[in-house]
Length: 411
Figure (cartoon, one colour):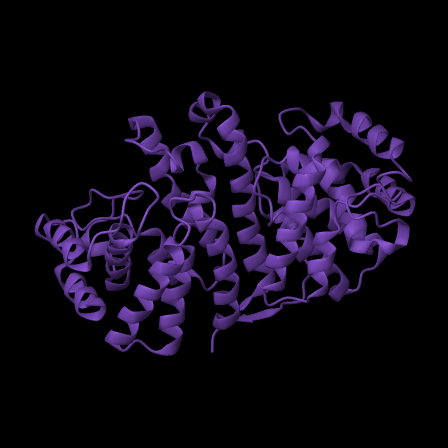
């Protein structure tokens, strides 16, 4: 059974949570979003990475035990996994904080990680003086939650459009002013020592441009993750992906069922079938970067909106290709809108570069979209769906062999 590194998987999938936060911001200013498709322009794109860096720097001065640091890393990287609203409200509105902390706890409990992390994430918005949503006070708040509280607010205060030199004093003054109220005074004292080193601020400024800054402080201990573990993780992220839009709230899970049927029909072994299921669960993870104003539009997309929608496959590849051992999964997931005639996206791959697995994924994806019920229309019958897909086969877009396999497996 293949094993991958859980830390690396968490680091990569945390990037998708940041993408989700940028898409929420984009909905508030769509014109600015469409004018700034460059990743570096996205507000909050590096929120999880930057907060994780701060948390690990502080945590290492408190306790350099690898198990402790692993918990700090995973909890901080995924601390916003339950966010469904804009990030500002998720840090200021009590009802939304309660909503996102409870959902975060529930999602973490579904992951193959230490269950203590669920409570840590649940309480990461608690104030040291007991004025948080759960009214925990002082050391009743988990230590790692207290660390994340400071790291999280630090990142909210940080403005990546400005030089770190002109905002150090402002951020430090704000954090120290809220010592004993929002923040544990001992953690603030540790933070003051950490931030005193110039390299800390230079890392904060440059973390968006290189993976090495965060990679060098991620706990060195490898936590092996089996394909079964990764499938459980993928199921949680499929839930997040599918529930981003009410139009597609079962799309990834339905697709995975179809893909598994096809794999079993072909006779793929257990490992390969699991990889195909993981690819299906995560194939639309790039849609977390797309504003809901586009995903939920009840009508034809404009040319500009369609370009943005098409970018989701690019982001799927970007997220999944960061994980060593995910090469096949990333390919099968990200190629689901490629066409044999080279007119697909995002890479414009032609038949020579599309594996049978990618071709099967593309057909299953179309089949699910055609047969699933949507709020604005009922799903069509399997026969009608395959008639439409067959016209795409005849036009040279989709694979005839893959079409026959999928049709025989699903009918």
